[in-house]
Image (cartoon, rainbow, N blue to C red):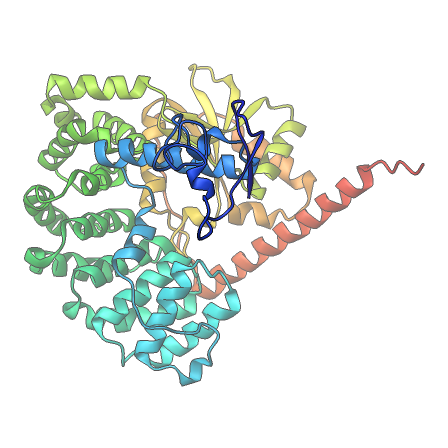
Length: 500
């Protein structure tokens, strides 16, 4: 290539020509043998070399990015011990099946080993092809009795990573997992519970079996996997007080084996509010204060919420904290924690539009302290409480049921305890109104009328049959599809065609 020299030289251009036998090479044209004034033996910043030449914009951006990344890695990884990828991607690097497979192969020809590698590879590469995963699911069910416990762990992680949600698959596959559960090692047990938490699968008997197996295999259970298992047990609603107390008795000794990076995920508001005893809560909050430098914003936000949950739901544990720990969480609540927020769902926007038609001043999708509020109303009640509307989509419930997941129950308890008057718009009620605005406005008016008692509990409705739940979900999706089509037609009709 040809480089233009930054400073005046006797030769206006320097050609990067190779050295020929019997003659002087270009590297001998300048003292030091480098392509720039001042010479030098290699590429040096601001001391000659390529950095003193005119570089094309793309090359300049690439060189700057390499230098900046090197600096960030030096200070971010070596000094602050922070990771650069999510837990799921780091797990891909740690547990990778080396078997070369082709995802589009005929599933009927796949055996258990090949099928395991295909599921692992498709999830690691983020292949969200519905037809592909349905073909995998059919073959997995055919081979479910041939998989080894370790292979089941890889398959469960793959389905959890892909978020593939088909009730018939899990209904047929989970009983096989429960039979094989006594043979599960640390990784397979963690993958199973993480997958069940991702798909919000409700099975109380399964939770008891997993908790007991975790206690029996505590010596071989990795500390990081123990954290994932206990977070999943709390998120799925483990209600056996004896098992929760037994897990709390062994928790501190197991968590003491964690590194700072692993311990970040242990401070979780749901486990603090629904699983651990006061002694474990005090240990978690005290230790996080000492390792918070390794935490990312999402860990800081969970720690902030966990401290609020402890203050409201566990006052004895809060009083047992040291003065330094209390001051740390007070300062944490006052600092800015980056948060991307939550994108409102189509149902959320529909509710917001009808509130605007009613003349209700409101704010959409904002954060109040560590809690996310869907719709906050501006007008105060007579007792000076504020009202908020929480939009309950199907993700707020266990799969195929009318029962709220424990994180939603805990959120409702916390908001009502902190002075909010919480009203809820359920997806099944909203879909019954279809697209009729004349029905939706009176529904919202009745929902907002009156005043709810302070600290009101969120109760579940009587459970419906699986067939009824599937039919309601199908109707809800159909209503959303029709609403999107009508909104698209309305946007097209408002367009202005400048036909010049």
